[in-house]
Amino acid sequence: MKLLQGKTALITGGSRGIGEAIVMQFAEQGANIAFTYLSSEEKAKGLEEKLNGMGIKAKGYKSNAAVFAEAEALVNDVVKEFGTLEICVNNAGITRDNLMLRMSEQQWDEVINTNLKSVFNLTKQVIKPMMKQRMGSIINMTSIVGMRGNAGQANYAASKAGIIGFTKSIAQELGSRNIRCNAIAPGFIETDMTKALTGSGTDEWFKKIPMGRFGKPEEVANTCVYLGSDLSSYVSGQVISVCGAMNC
Image (cartoon, rainbow, N blue to C red; front, side):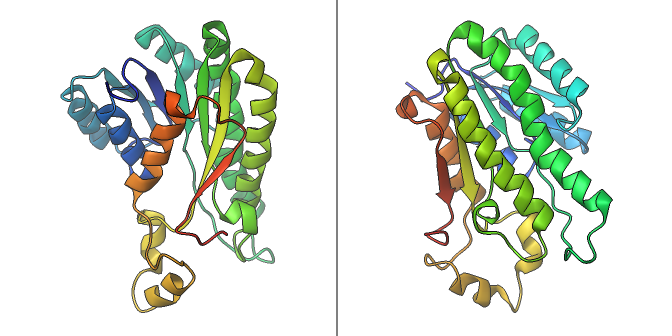
């Protein structure tokens, strides 16, 4: 039996990068998939068709998780369409890097709203059906930057550190309802965000990673599969680093 057979998962930012890898891995493990996107509607529709061709039920939703009303409408629509909601992966995220001396209020607010407020918005909504079911798994995407900081990323680091505290608090609040909440902290993963690091300076970045390479989106997705499945039924309130031993 597949690890996520019969479960419904909601994945934000699911049309590209790590989000798309999570969507595909979940589908391969038998989960029905609801995913969100903000742009590239044609690409999202193509992904939806591909997923439905895998023998599961899938639907893409154009929705901004940073907007409370949109998050509320999204979860209501997903529960109405799929009937249940067992897994939520809060994956939406952006960067607006700048040194603090030059960072604008807009750069700060955009990152905090997209990366942190979105986690509050979605969690606030998904716990309602999960509490009725008396089960659920919430997986929040943080970062090793949220654990150790990084010059030029004070806004990003603050948003990701906030996710860690939020995750641990929700795990304690909802543990008695059999709802688990964990976080994954990726290191350098091969995505659009890290493409700017490639080139002549790549070897210098690799020296900071004991395993000597960037991670693959699928390696983060595999950890999501574990946390979404019953294999992790007694794992909650934890932060799992997927970073090639960079954050030891």
